[in-house]
Image 1 (cartoon, helix red, strand yellow):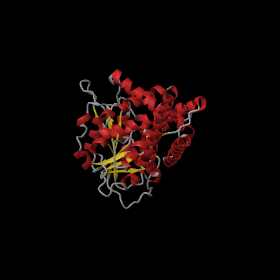
Image 2 (cartoon, rainbow, N blue to C red; image 1 turned 180 degrees about the horizontal axis):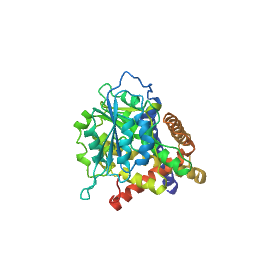
Image 3 (cartoon, rainbow, N blue to C red; image 1 turned 45 degrees about the horizontal axis):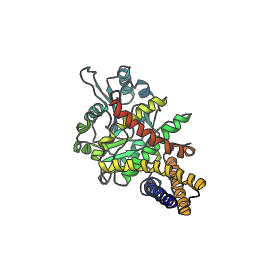
Image 4 (cartoon, rainbow, N blue to C red; image 1 turned 90 degrees about the vertical axis):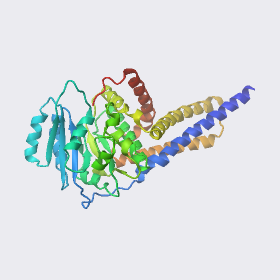
Length: 383
């Protein structure tokens, strides 16, 4: 009787492991592999629609001084840069007129501080859109810069065939240390999700440091009113609301990549992640289901793989051993090939040795951040 019970447990454990391995293989084959084979075209100057670059800045004088000229010196004929000075208390208001003397296509507007009214980044984005002269908007943050002078051309190339929304990759500058590897791998993994999902016809988010959409798409949306009470969401919830298969494109050519300054401490990264997670509860059900299923199946895959290995060594269990080993090996080979090639395409270096470590850690940390957000009610989270 005991032997039969053990056999039943062994069979259940084996098939559970195979099921989670199959789910993981599905995600890598159906979603993530798309980024490996996505077409990369050189920017073509024959598709230069007029563009308004919108930058929201709150106490970003130093970053604007350093990075704004890079945005202003793009190889693009017809564009403007609109900087929204959002209640800055530094010398941003004096810096912008100085730069306007050199760059005629730089424009600025501002938001005055009102102690009776608290607002997040959505108001600054709205003000920037209202101030924009053109009907295509490209967004980048004040602490970001494009890696190429052809960044705007690469993004604008996607505004064709009725595309109204373009999602790009916004990475972080490389630094020394383990925190750098964690931040950049997390950024890469998030991008693999939203870019591959969009490529598969399921756009659900973008990043405000490198995305674009048309005035037509903005006017068709709720213009942030559906989620204005949530501090984040000016990028991901907008995409979730308006993005569809027919109107969304991704752009991951080398010329389209932007870089941002990294956080300095682990605590800052945790706070940043918690803030980003506040909007995910507003995603559509299919997005929430698929985004939850992948990390869940991932952690279960690792857990059951360890159990199976231990029981094989210490109890001699070997039900479907060759098949299990093949399935586990396939999952790891696919993961390392696809993550490695995607990292190379997005110019993320030095992450390959950390794939398994962060692959296990990040879903656990994300789950903990969700718990913290529930407990603290997000009172201190601001952009």
